[in-house]
Length: 315
Image (tube, rainbow, N blue to C red; front, top):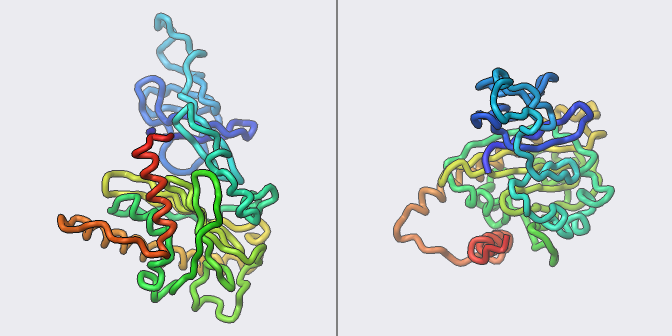
C-alpha cells in the first residue's frame, strides 16, 4: 500500500492519506511521530503545500499551467477508523468496516475493550522499534503461543500456562493466560508484591488481530506489537506500552516503568533471537513441517486464517 500519513487538523480531527505528493510522488512527511508546521504539509521536492486535511493550498509556479485547478488536487485519502485510541488505516476502499473485523472482541475482553473499557483511558508511556532479519510470520507465530516460554524464556519469564479464547467471531484470535499477578514484571521483580501498579482486573490475554497486530492485556496495562514486513526475510517490530492515565501520575510510576520496560526488552530480544535461529534452520533443503503441539493452538489458528486468505481469496 505504500507510505501513510495520519495528521490532526486545527480542530483536532484525524485525517489519513497517502504520504506521497500529488505532483511527483515525493514523500512529504518523514517516518515516525512529530508535529507538522501550522502553515501546512510541505513537500521537500518542489514545495507543494497541503493543508492538514490533505487539500493542496500552494503550488509554486503553477499559475500559468493549462487545465490545472489547485482546488481539485489533494493527497489520496485513505479509510481510517479509531478504536479505543488505536488508529486503523486501510488502503482498500472496499474493505469491510473495522467493527466487523473486530467482531465480538469488545464483548470477550470488556475490561479493556468494552464500552467503558480501560484501554480508551490509557496513555502510551513508551515505544520501541526492532529490526529483525527474519520473515514477519515467524515473529507473529511466536506471539501466538506459550509453548516456547519454558525454553526460550527459561531465565526470564519462565513457563506460562495458556488456554484458547472461547468461540468468537471476527478476524482475531486470543490466548488466555491465567496468572496470579500482572504478567509483565519478571518473577524477580517486586517479589512479594503482586500489585506494583494499581490493577483494574485480574485477567490477562494475548490478542492477535490479523494479520500482524498483537495487543497483550493484563492486570494493570497493555502493550501492542505491530510487525511490518520490510522484505522477504526482514521485519520491523513497532511496540507501544500503555497505562491508565491515573497510573502515570503516581510518584512511583517512573521507577516502576523502568522495570516494566526492561522486561519487555528482555522478552522481545529473546523472541527475536529464536526467530533468527529459526530462519537459519528453515534454509535446510531437508526441512519438512512438523506437527503442532496442543499448546500451539494460537499458531495453528493464525496459519489457518492466513491460508484462508491466500487460498480462498475471501478478502
